[in-house]
Image (tube, rainbow, N blue to C red):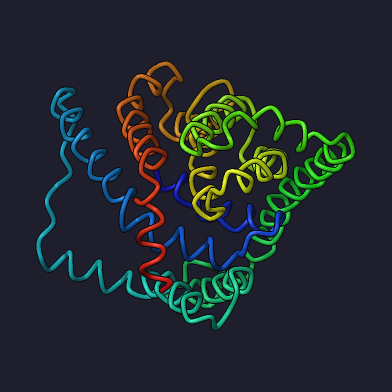
Length: 287
């Protein structure tokens, strides 16, 4: 779930950056409102499900820590806990953009890792830079290929064709969102998140605007739907990472995650049926 949370955050910036949606608006919309509403319910359901699964499988319980150990751990992690608060306050106040926030976070983590926690050594920096360059290059190659595909679809007038196909549903926004969710989920089962966003967004956005659907609301639902593809075969990026880390096979992993996947489906259905779950907190916080 932590891996997925980071992917949510990354793509809440990636989506608007490339297709004209106000980035701070969507980022604030997502980071403030979704945890306050839908995600709170989602994580609560997942905790309840995990309680019953752990009880059924008789999983080993972690040793309860004393109050002194809890306080010590909190103090030790204080420098790390300050970072997300600092970023959110800066974004919310308009002091810096999401892109600048990434730079600030990297520099802050570098300084804290070198001089406070001292887990990062000078001789490790080159390996870190090479690893970051490799990760960034993969994303940029995917983005480049996706932009070529996007250009070809634009030349072929695919967005207009898709809008025409979805025209019968333009006057029924809820039904249109259901159809879009199905399309995105099917594509997400065989394609990674970044190319899915960069290819499908320019295709679906004209129909969304024509239906009068709030683009920030669409962005939140769209990102959550694409990330759900990370939990579904045949790609299942998160599943593969979890299987490798836990040294278990895919079949056992799939059997274990279906209750949590079901909880996400329920939340997404509620968000589609009741857009106010997203839009009301947005309007409240943004005035």
